[in-house]
Image (cartoon, rainbow, N blue to C red; front, side):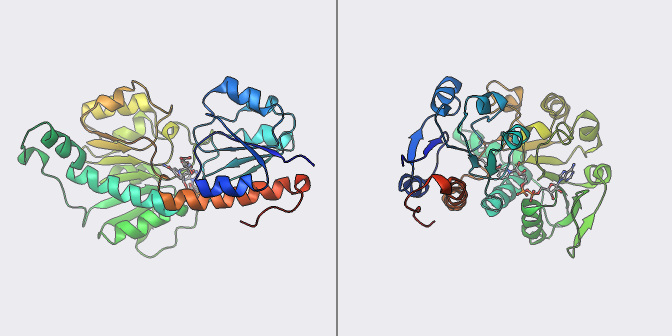
Length: 311
Ligand SMILES: NC(=O)c1ccc[n+]([C@@H]2O[C@H](COP(=O)([O-])OP(=O)(O)OC[C@H]3O[C@@H](n4cnc5c(N)ncnc54)[C@H](O)[C@@H]3O)[C@@H](O)[C@H]2O)c1
Ligand SMILES: O=C(O)CC[C@@H](O)C(=O)O
């Protein structure tokens, strides 16, 4: 029996690739090259992606043999799960694999915002020594508002409570029962928080959730941190709001379109911007790779002989 063909269209750890290669014919390409992706999918049994490959209906149309799409990470907003389900294609991901990494990056961005770390570092690199301009605020005693109290939101709450912040959380679907975390409505959270941090998925229901009205509710001294998904925030409204100084600044790991090209957000002095690094630790990538490889091989089991290397 020929080995199943697995297309890997984003970077995966060597260990994951080795596991897959022990049982499958693994082919690499850059998933942003749609032409190459379409060509490779004609005889593919599995496709493994991260956030860089858009797996829409057009992609699935080109893959008549596809049994499984593996997402080496959490967010499934780049995969058309409805079309996949309609065609009997399994979609598997690795929830929880990168929770700690995203929470730790979020802590970094909160501290960087309160203390102007990136702007001050850039200024010194430019040969300047402007101490008073970069005076920040303490986080202790101030209020953190968490929108989306799932895996990452809860880990951020724990870590920032250790900074002695008062923690609010808004999540219509979660049980917010942790001591020291106060459940609130979204408007109240926006109006009372000194830092607002987003940890919810991008779905048709959450796209543009934070728009001009919501931003206008925030304090002029507050910071917005987004390590969730770009499309949750209306970027045009955010650009206008930041130019007007309400909120005071934003730290963004994610953008509506990635890479964000010439987005005006990148040119604003009160923006800290990162190239979607939340899950980019060796630890998280290894966990995500192991989990997704195991799930993909399980879906391919009927095509495998002899049985795959255990993962
Ligand atoms: N920057 C990165 O590299 C990176 C890495 C991992 C995850 N993420 C993003 O972070 C998101 C959260 O990850 P997670 O593992 O915590 O997911 P999760 O599913 O554990 O938590 C998401 C929470 O959002 C809540 N939610 C849904 N709609 C909401 C709404 N309208 N208002 C408030 N809350 C709402 C859900 O009830 C859930 O509790 C993912 O969906 C993904 O998009 C980003
Ligand atoms: O694939 C990535 O590198 C980022 C993934 C991350 O955003 C996720 O949703 O797990």
